[in-house]
Image 1 (cartoon, one colour):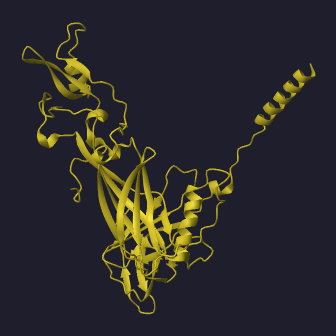
Image 2: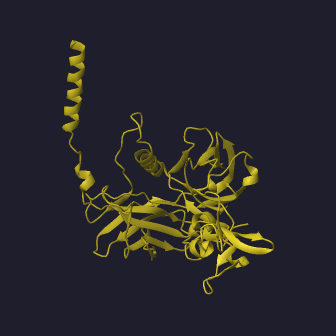
Length: 390
């Protein structure tokens, strides 16, 4: 009997404890502080420089970023009075064409808000980025692992960062050979220019990718992991391309990106590193106590593109279509069993996409059809291939 009452007593304590819970709303969640975030690399070589400016947002807000416009963004050379002004392109983007900076000089970024508040980065040396030796891939553990090889024969780089843009060709679940004419409201065959079976789309890297050879005798990065793609990903179902960009970092720049990576990508368990304060090289000269997020590096960009065909991958890798697509339905011009004009109801008026003709005795009695998401690739891509596509 005593064990029974002990059990009931413990159960009551748990219920009471649950009822005494209070929501935890630390001040940082509701703080209205919007700090400047500076992203980008000052390109010293033959490529354009693109700097993105935004403000931090509250964790409780629905938006993930707050781009800022109408700022003045200038690259300045130390002790020479030489400057380069970037142009605002909207959505927080500022850019300028190739500047061909003097590798023996130091440069900084100077930002002025419309209200006159000023931000500057430290003067930074120009780092030379060595070429990418190769970009490769290997199937491993039901994933496709894309890697990079690089080295610096002079042993002067040691610290590296990469990002990438990717593009891929894909197709819909079903190929639609017919279309509802916008003028006549009748079903007709598609013209070649109206094909919506194959499309192209793409994206950019979102993770922080860094590497270091500081602990090695030679400045070599061998098969540094760039990205991992699941074996059933649609992006590798037909043809995939990745453009890898490589940047040399200073030791301080590498430490900044390493801390940022730990703070944003490695806080999922009790064994991960504790959050650390991010110390970049950008400061608010109008208010030195105001935090600024970002690190300005100056280097030339090295890049390399590769293409990966599905035929180069394991044959048992089958892509997973992103939408649930059941077998196509059938629609007759007139169904005597239901007394319905199904083509008119489900396709012409109902928005179904005609796939193939249903024929009998040499005539067309109706069409098979499916949803737009299963037959029209342009809802998430474009038919025209990118300019670089082979």
